[in-house]
Image (cartoon, rainbow, N blue to C red; front, side, top):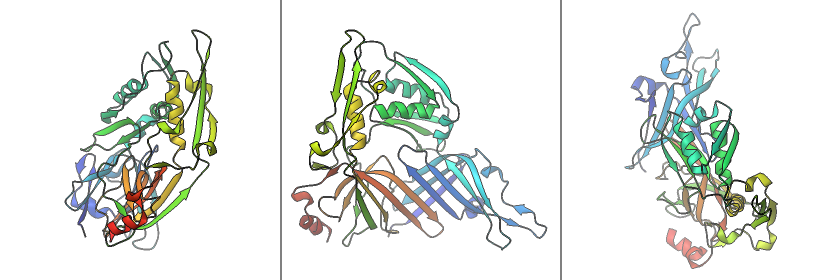
Length: 374
C-alpha cells in the first residue's frame, strides 16, 4: 500500500503543527462547470466560565486563504483546492468534545463571481475575451486558454454580456463547446484561469480496475440516458445578402471516447434547434457541434476507490481508463466530479464519470480484458 500524506497552507504559508493538529476532517468537492469547495472541520471547546476558544484565530477568518494538497506514494503533491474561506458552520454542544466549526473554502473563481456588470467587447474573439477577463483579477496568476475560431460573419464581432465575469466566461465557453474554470496552481496563491474543451486522450492517470488482483475500486455503477444524444440545428440571417444560413450537427465530427457512438442509430437521436442568438457571433458550425457534443454524454458512472489501493488522485477535466467492467463499457471516461475525504486515518475518493461512446473489438472483449487483469 502506498504512503499517503497531505499538507495545508494558510494565507499561502505552510501550516504549523499546531494548526494541523486542529484539523479533524477535510472534504473537497470538485465538479465540472461549478466552483470547487472544501469543508474543513475544526473542534472548538469552552472553558469552565463558558468562554469558547479556537474560533477567532486569524488563519480561519473570512477570506483568509486555505490550500490543501495530497501525496500518494512517490508521486509529487497534488493540490486539491486553493482559495478563500467564504463562510463557516458553527456547531456547539454542551457535551465535551462535540462542538466544532466547519470552514467553507472555495476556489478563486469566487472572486470572478462577486460583481455583476454589463460588458461590451468589440472586434475580439471569445478566447481573447477570456484572456482579458482572467487578466483583470490578481488572484489568477496564469491562464490556459484554447483558441476559438472566428465567426462565419464578415462583420466585426461584438459581444455584449450581462452578469459576473465568471458567468460571462461560462456563457462564452458553452457556445464554443468549451469550459471555463479555475484550477489551483503549482504554488500557493497562483491559480490558473482555464478556458478549454474537454480532453480527448488520457494523460497518465492510473487505471480504475473493478475485478482481479489489481482491483482498486469498490463499486462502479453505470446509468444510460438514451434520450440525451441529439442532432442540433441552427440558422442565422446574413446581413449582407439577406439569405438564411442553416447548419446541422453531425456525430461524425465528435471526439468519441470509444470505437462506437453511444446510440444504436443516428436516426433515433433527438433534435434540438438552437435559439437565434447563438448563431450571431459564433461560427455556426461551431455552435451546433458544441451543443451536440454536450448532449452526447449518454453514460454516467459513479463509484469509489478502495482505500489505500488506488495510486492516483482523480481530478475533473481529465480522462481515466476503466477496466474490469463489461467489454462495451470498459474504456476511457471523462471525470466530472470527485469528492475527496481526508481524516487523520484515511483518504477516500468517490467519483462521477461520463462517456459518449461504447467500446468494441477484441481489445475490449470480456475474455481479453479479464485475461489482462488476472
